[in-house]
Amino acid sequence: MSELSNSLQKLLSPVQLNGITLKNRIIKAATFESMLDDNNNITDKCIDFHESFAAGGVGMTTLAYCAPEPDGRMIDSYMYIREEIKPQLQKLAERVHKHGCMLSGQIAHCGAFSRNKKLQRKRPVAPSTQFNSVGMLYGLFFTQEMDRQLMDEVANSYGNTAKIMKESGFDAVELHFGHGYLLSQFISPITNKRKDNYGGCIENRMRYPLEVLANVRKQVGDDFPILAKITMYDDMKGGISLADGIESAKLLDKAGIDGIILSAGTSSQNPMLLFHGDSILPGLLEYEKNPVMRFGMKLVAKTMFRNYPYRELYLLEAAKKIKAETSCHIIYIGGANEVESLEKVMDLGFDFVQSGRPLLRDPEMIHHLQKLGKNYVNGCDHCNKCAPLMNDPDGIRCVLPKWSEQ
Image (cartoon, rainbow, N blue to C red):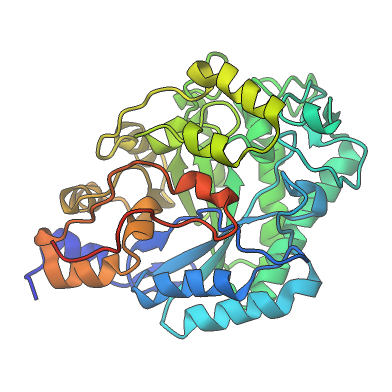
């Protein structure tokens, strides 16, 4: 057993998050599982997947992309939360809790970013009526601008989903305000062209996302943790700027969010900013069955799948600026792979680290950190071959040989 630095001791020590206590400061990030049955419900394989991280010692694990209504699914085979699937959600919570681990559910609505052929509405909902390049091959040529009734319907679906999760034994929820999903579409000037008080300045563009937060808070109560994942910036002309990211974080903080996860980029237009490292395009092409879609992806490859070489802590500078402007818990994500990086994040005063690829590489990372300390080597090579496996029947996983002590 190696002696742990003060920074690692902090990372691996218990911490309060609103009404719950996590046994350490490492949160398993939402990494789309793709482990569902024919009834759009999580399978035992998905439960086993999350239990592996719980058994490996993480403080909290996150069930990914829980759509709050059927039309919130990008593809009709994805999951949406409803009373009917409570037994499996409860089973997941029980299995995770058995290891002293907390459970969060990520609530995300695709909005305009839809290829769902089984929409209940005529068109995908969005802040503004726009051409839907993602869904055009599926007959979804345009989005539907959300009026007051639709905005209330969707906000209520977020609140109801959070309520079901809490009743199923979840310990927290993560609202997805980033990566090009619906709430991010309101925040981004590229997708929000509204002329009313929900468009224009950042305060107006944040108005509906904050209404959704208020609806969720009303349903779960004051002591239930609500996290927000945001896009700090999306590195696109006319899109979300870092100034927007700072202001949106400040508004969420003022509205009573318990913690903010500081990500970047947008899945539908600039996904490599999220990942850094090798391109995910080859893997996505392997799983894309539509030849026209494959051709289109190749056509936009240079603009959509940009080259962002991997480097440690690649989102740190932007994250530090937001941390300086907020008082809620701040959760770092983005290239915290090496021990030195984890220590630096703790030394800079971040409250948590959310980890995706490193934990896929080594689900027992926490136990190995406790054992090896500074000598721990994760071994993720940032090939990003794990990400396209969200479309694989066997689900997302690391393609490298099983982790072993170096």
